[in-house]
Length: 106
Image 1 (cartoon, one colour):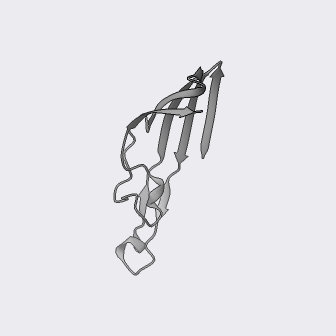
Image 2: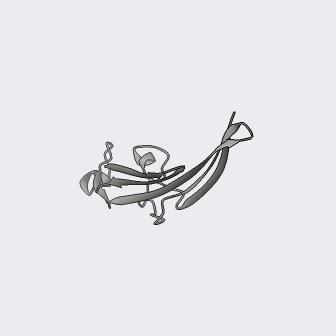
Image 3: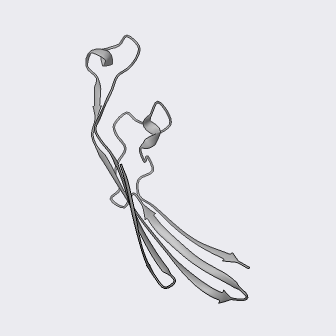
C-alpha cells in the first residue's frame, strides 16, 4: 500500500509518504527444504519526508531549495533479501538516507 499527502503554504511544500509491504510467504520453485518449510517475511513500513521552498524572482529566475529523509524510521530489510532480485527489490536496503538540493530555472 502507498499513501502520500502534502501541505502547501505559499512557497513552502511539505510532503509525507508512507509505503507498506505486508507479510509474505516465499516459496522456492526448485525441490528444496524451503518448499516444505517456506520462509515467511515480516511486514515493512517505510516513512519518507520531503520539503521544498521556492524563491521566485531570483536573478530573473526561480530558485528552489529541497531536501528530505527517506526511510525515516531506519527500517531494516527482511532477512535473506538483498534488494537485488527475485522480488526482493521492493525492500529498502540502504536504511535511512538524507538528501539536499538546489534547482534554478530561468
